[in-house]
Image (cartoon, rainbow over all chains, first blue to last red; front, side, top):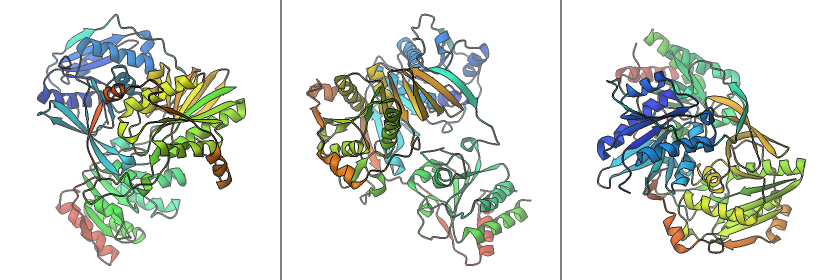
Length: 325
Length: 262
């Protein structure tokens, strides 16, 4: 087992890839070894390599292969495996994007090892020379702490938890793997539809106005829009029922939907179901407005305003307008 | 004719889960039921069968009582059901579950599709379906939100986070579906009563070729702690009767504490 050392990181999303370098360094600074970043595709540009190098990668593994042109779980796993064979990392860190979720567990299975999905809290256990992962479990009702006991361990780490490292002098060793055996894709993409980009995506927003079932009619959401406007650069997001049951929103905040990490989160008319709360638990500050003094949300927030949102919210908007302008 | 295997889990009913005073969940006392999204997987399979003909076979791995999940699948319309008995004390993590499912599927024999739910509400690992595909040496198509079958091929539509795509793959494939794929059909008491009398194929893990040491070796994770989240928050109460006064107090505090600034 001591054959495995250091960390290999991969993400298909450039920004998350850089965040994974930070997560990797957190591990190697205590447990030793290098942070190696895997880049692959039908071709890999100098720009991509430089971007990773100047953010502190120790090694960069490059695989160029036609079969890696687009996502295929088996072809991608072949690329992960080729990199693992080359550098024998103790941990392989994947940024938690959907392609990673659909392929990283295959790598763990190939090596008969463990995989943790949603490793939000990464704790280094120096005494045992391992990483302990804290993750949401039991459908959002509990936090579980787990340790992989076989290597290379596969950790799927959510995006947005770790910062992008400061730029530094690039000194990464570049390793090109030219003889990797990459299977031909079994999955054929027949249509790709870009998502409409409207404003700031929820998972990148610094201020979020969260709305729940306390809003009785769709037009009442205008009050929340007003609050978002007065806060500046804030995004309105909803709980699951408003999206899945009422159809007022396309997506929802929660561990079954989108996990958010804003600086400021307003929870308005939100009762505080476990799956929602766990999706906002990493917000710096949470403000809850709810007319039920026993609402669960008050256990998870910093400023608890007990009262009817229909009366309080317009007053909060007024007050902010006066004080912030 | 499409032959479909649907693995289902008899899971803790999360809505009924309670916690001990130290914050640990009372899993043994909690009621159990079929994992909700597994019913969506069943529904997807049944609709394919209704359109193209074929068979839907339900499969579970778990202790004796897990047959109840299969009863639900039979009541929904499964043609046959298979139960690999894995006593609670032998249970390990996702690696073993996927290995056992793979061996059971190989023993069941010919199939075109395996359809699973994306995640189980209690384990909440989201990796078993993908591990299973690797064990079977098959492609996996996940986050399936809509699916169609045509000429020994399956075509799905899914949201990959950054983009939406339509992809296709030739049989056999392992699919995992997300919750609202199709509303699962309702099961009435009559159907459930009938399903209770249906025979279920039962295998032990030994019959599938697993020795005790195989099972021990399959342990890849150590669970160190599982409890109700302790989230540190200030919990400052603002209970002014007058909405305007409440709003003023809130904004004053937010500015004083540096949460908001001009």
